[in-house]
Image (cartoon, rainbow, N blue to C red; front, side):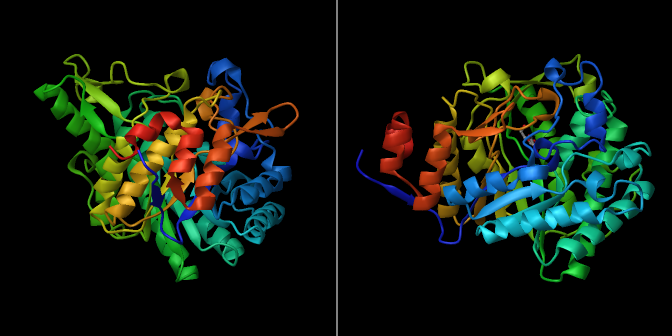
Length: 444
Ligand code: BGC
């Protein structure tokens, strides 16, 4: 195979992604902190603790990001810090976020700010949080208004809500996130709809304050495919699961319609249609589904991995780069600026991450060649951080974190990502150096 260069567009955004509770530390006033204290909620009963100490020193990572050549970073603001009690806003917390955003800008890194990434202030959680539209929506709107007024001179790139489908499903079906409810489909749908209404309200509120803001949301999408080749029932279940997980969010935002399965007893989705300036794709893995007549609660389908698939640490998921292009193709029909707002792998010894990065970026590059409006890639994550119910065991960082000393240790993937970012391309030299095993498949 001879030399090649897969160029990315000149103004492509090369970033990493984090969120407040993963990295800040001592977020003692949200529902996740409370949940962590419960026995058995987190693997090994881990606690987020001081996390990556960003509240005191995010700047050490900003320096490393700048050194890597990144021009973008996605981070989130923590509602429970900014509004520690209902109706009381903490200026010191807002000032700290101002400092962080300024710190990123001064290093040539454009911040994208997520307004809700899985955490709620305890005072809101005690009122049922996203279960009650009449309670949460006005409160979220007021919070968003405050953030945009106070941070708007430093940021005009907003991600309203992270993964409404994951929040609703994991907290109300899977029970692995607070409030830890299991198989409660009616509440799952209510919460999902309320998050989408929250997104729309935030979209309008932001644009009233900042007419030129770019507002989007981060949507977690996965290809669902039947487990057994040519098995009609497996394939049908896969289509249903995909419609539930992937399409409901898109249908509401793009067309202003609840999908039929979402609309039972639902208030009309007024004001949602078109509330999006860009779309964020969080892509990790694919899902295989198998018909199971004994699983009515999951629409007669069970979820599997492809037999013999390469799996990441702790069976987090199957490594399936082709799904990246598939999902980018799915959203390309909306002709929307699109960013991969998350993509990454738990891989403590970094023996899979280099080829994960190259092979997924190759799919992003293909999407660019097809003129799918892809404008950036944010790797999850910059440094190992507190991974929700998986605690500290899942290591997603380009940098390893020495938890005790807070020392950052670059993994080989950090060097690889830096090379790609600086070349603004995947080159044969980079592939030869970091992932020689991929050379034969880069241009099949
Ligand atoms: C979430 C992140 C999470 C990542 C890795 C995404 O679904 O947005 O908060 O850490 O997956 O599991």
